[in-house]
Length: 509
Image 1 (tube, rainbow, N blue to C red):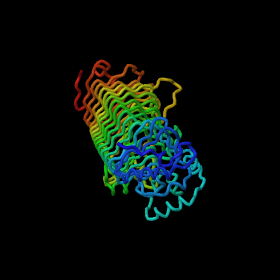
Image 2 (cartoon, helix red, strand yellow):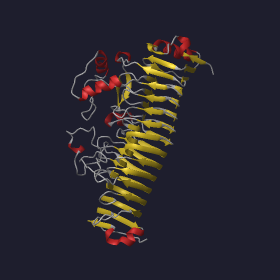
Image 3 (tube, one colour):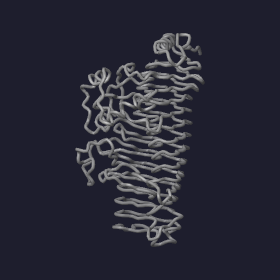
Image 4 (tube, rainbow, N blue to C red):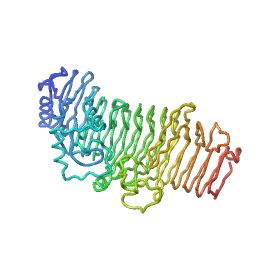
């Protein structure tokens, strides 16, 4: 296939000259001739927005770097989905909408130079006002969009809606392969309403203090395959989303049929995260053969009473984790970004089920090995009116940090702040949980504590370290329990403590 070399169209690879026009001319000429490869040889190419077109592959060769300007006036507003809301914001740096058969490939680097964007975010967090001609444009374009009160994003009042490094909207037959994507102003790589996407062998990097520096966001997309990628970011490594609250429910496009395999995650708030923007639904997600080192959470599902939607049919297998705060977190009471003037957001009691009620069900986690975890071995927290349903934990070993001076934290952000350090698995408001061949080593306390839960099957749940005067398992207001296993049989009363709980059926090992 013929390659359209950007240098032949006037691009200067000295890292100084603005190559926006030369790159655009190369893409346009390629498109006029039916498509092909737009080729970047070695060198540094400074540019503004790169607007993709159908049937085009951007190929960034080894030694080549695309360096985006940090002049905000270059990024004219476009329609986007910004943090779950369909609205207008600064143009993404690499942007495509309504395209087919596109690719970004090579061994080079795409660098968003996000530092200037991050600095404005920092000032906004410190209460400094920001206004510019561009934010005035964005404000005018968003004048008919009534932002809900529950936003926790400091940019909304100023309309300084930072762009992702790469955003593809409503695109089909997409390949992202080989390149390094780094220093994004906002999220790094954002797929929205896309279908049939292959993401392979990417390196996605953002500094650890990047505000909202997600790695890969899969947002209301179908048939997505992610493999052999490396993430080292300042927020979630991979986040699966589908819009937020009423706006997301109205659009109603789920994220579905997603596979993630053979990836490594070094640092980040979460390894694989589903939600909290899940209002269009998330289903049919498989994660396998991944390594998480130093992520705050490993596998994380989060939603709340404002979202609605569903997260279901999730299969996770063959995962290694180390130095996580909480390796498994499933939370339907996520408090971040909710309207605190709405009492239902923090109410302990059951409330009526409505279109705002989220559903989490059919979750299977197996063959997980996690070491040196700091807060809790697992955290599963449903809603009193809508428990988490049908969850299976199978062949899992979790070892908590044993240092007496260790610092823990919140395993996840629920309505009340629950600080834990070296604790076991905690579950509340669950209907149907199976724990089979699980070993949990705690620094203190029980290895398993379940409350307000029903339909529990426990088989061979063990620990090597039995704490004095502390049972391995505590059940509080639990209905319908079956327990079997060697330690249950041999340790008798030191194994199990019941509070307002009857064992309907006990099977001895």
